[in-house]
Image (cartoon, rainbow, N blue to C red; front, side, top):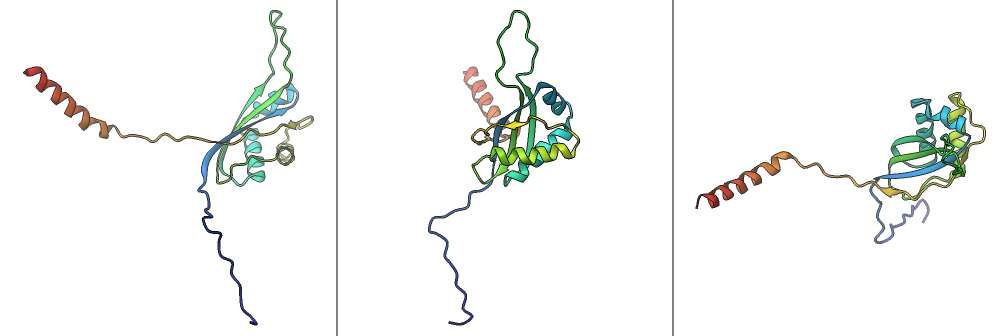
Length: 163
């Protein structure tokens, strides 16, 4: 029929996952001097990491925690060599997908963001992200819920002691 529109029915049993809070982390290899510079740049660097994550993921409420990795002075008693140096970035975010960003895509977005903020990016190499994990949220329990129960048990205890 001319002008008719067709509609497709959704698959039976197909559901859309509700967004949940998740966490993932990634190691980013670089020199210790660059890692020090990025970590010590505070919110400027943190914002660059968060924005790069948002550009490469469908996520909201993104938070990043940055820490130096493998960059410490070794004493004469400790001769263990660190194999990789740089930054460990831990992300928490809200998303309905259970996949992490691709390392190459994130690296490109991160380098662009850091350069825009005047932070050096030479030698940055983003490794593979860890598998995202759902962050368990603990429900808050009101103290008012426990008070009547405590009062009841104290009353029973005092009646039992008086016999």
